[in-house]
Image (cartoon, rainbow, N blue to C red):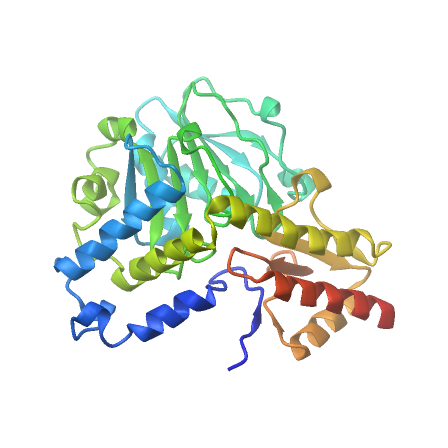
Length: 360
């Protein structure tokens, strides 16, 4: 079978070896006579999967023991609500840095919960860049500062994070988690939907400083309280067992590839191939993001006019490239080059882009 040239923004490409391993165990996991999605989440077979996934995350990302690792459903979109529900207490306001559509959505959900404050924004500039950390101004009653580390729609990415520890720092890392090394202790809560770099859709990973757990809103419904997941090892209810199993396989793949140093180097190589292609096109391909904060996960660009863009996308589709349409809210083109996208596929895309330019 010929694999697609998959540049989807999410759900995104998964490593071929992960899919093959899952296929091998599809009907009979570990001699149980059952598929993973048939196992009881209380069984010893599934509990081993669950623990291995947590242990691998802790090892690969160097997550200290002072942090909980939680598996929650509902995607980042549920976290947009859970964060303010748990952390905006009386007399406090959630502070947000707006750098893209999902940061804006996080703010909109927080506004339904309690007081909010925009600490910095690039919305007026159509989210072309990330604000300087020195330009972030917290409100006096800040409960936390929320950022979105990578912006899939507009193709920008933080290269330096706020270091103000006066208030907890919260980060939505859905689209660049596991793409490079980070210092988890710089953050008090990190959340990430799995469907970009971690695995399939269905599970959201939350890494949370245990100190936060003692100050949460205790009047929340059970399934909206982080303590429910922390106290029950994310097994209070039935978790997305198949998604967590595939998450474990992806983490094993990261280890087999050489860990985050190798993954990060490869991601830099892939991004450079496409950005060099754009920069050398003499204005034929026009990047959306300012160069200093270009995303290494989502390469966004336009062509010189709408007719050229339509022709490019049509011919790319005919050539086998999947997922190159820009988000419906901004149009243009986008190549999402997450961890599992091979360098060879990126090279083929760059070759296609050069040929299209020369022939247009």
